[in-house]
Image 1 (cartoon, one colour):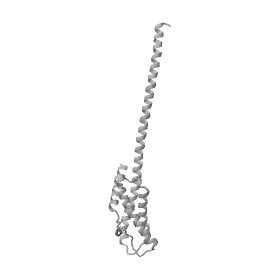
Image 2 (tube, helix red, strand yellow):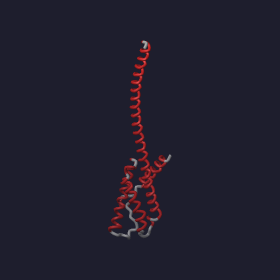
Image 3 (tube, helix red, strand yellow):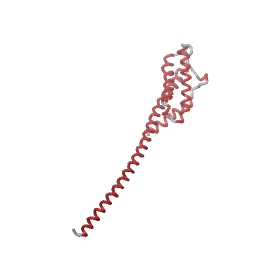
Image 4 (cartoon, one colour):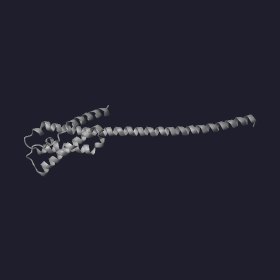
Length: 180
């Protein structure tokens, strides 16, 4: 072979070799960058999904509290505060069950509550705890059916109306945000 052909062939092999090395290093660098981007994307996606799930669970919780608070309000406006005689079925099926349900929801699902509702939730829980205790003492232990209704407001545990208002407002706000 002629010397020029050998030089051309040699320089082509050397160039191809260096090109392959450079391509390999660029490829490795690209793979590392892609891996970092993928991890960051997955992390952000997890946070977003987690936040969405928390909001969804919060709206579900607040919706249940909202319905039971309305149920209690209607019960007091329509009958409970106006009854002339004790009505066991009405008290047990509406007042007792809604009081227990709201209390249990808040205690068991407090981790879904927005921080601004935690103090209000505590006030509701306290009110329901006291009412349930008085109900148990009056109706179960003393078997008192002469008392028309059980109220704990006069005992210093008025129903926290502001808590009810804030819970309902937060439910509507979060529901609307979730369903935009």
